[in-house]
Length: 318
Image (cartoon, rainbow, N blue to C red; front, side, top):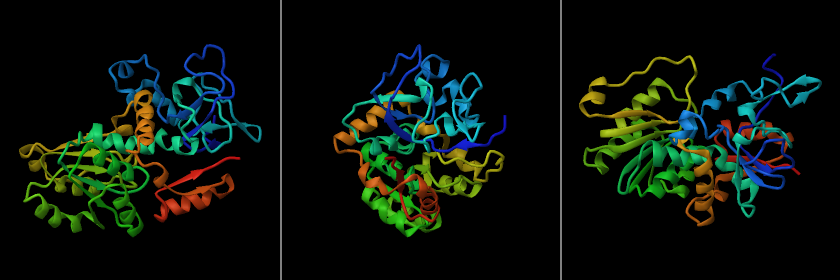
């Protein structure tokens, strides 16, 4: 089967219209958030509380149902789904392991945000880098994930949150979500961080840029001090293999580089937790949405994302 046609979209929320035989966790009429990583609850990784590494997650790159078939068709051809979700469609058919039931009072257009970006960003700060009260934290890249890494650091009690982003719009927005200092580059931020920490440097650097590169990792390592954590959340090209940073510092200063898929979050517990924080006024979701789009405006949304004109764009269906 060819990789195309495909239906994009890996974040979403909606109402269950029907369930198949054997489905127990949700029922018709339930409000749900779609999780881009399934959580089966039975594999080794789910059993030890690492649902973000669920063994069924390998299937999100294939885009087919678990039996290898498709329930979606485009012009007579089987279609694949991004992350087995395909949220750029008004309706979809997905496995119950990929949905999390939520309270019906939460607006679906805001609930959709926690299916990936919000939970990933907050989790990167709270779980990945283990940000604590009084810490100095650097967030590299303030987009749909990075803005929430800023929020996660704020919720965790960080004293200084340094946002680094080349786009003026993103730097301006970072302040709204809790950043205390904003800079256009790591080079520009280096000396101020040295001064504000009296040479100790940051406790953590959260990498939430568009694409992780060797230079980004090197910059992040340079901004943290002893026992500093570098949490890598932004993906790199699959073929990327080269990294350059001072190995001596990694050893002598016990710096740590941590891979952070979905911010180390567990969909079944952390998606409801994010919505609870939103309900309590501690997590900003409404403010994340710069603009909403209809399906026929999807290319406008992508262009705004590429040119740093929105933090989050949300597509609404009639």
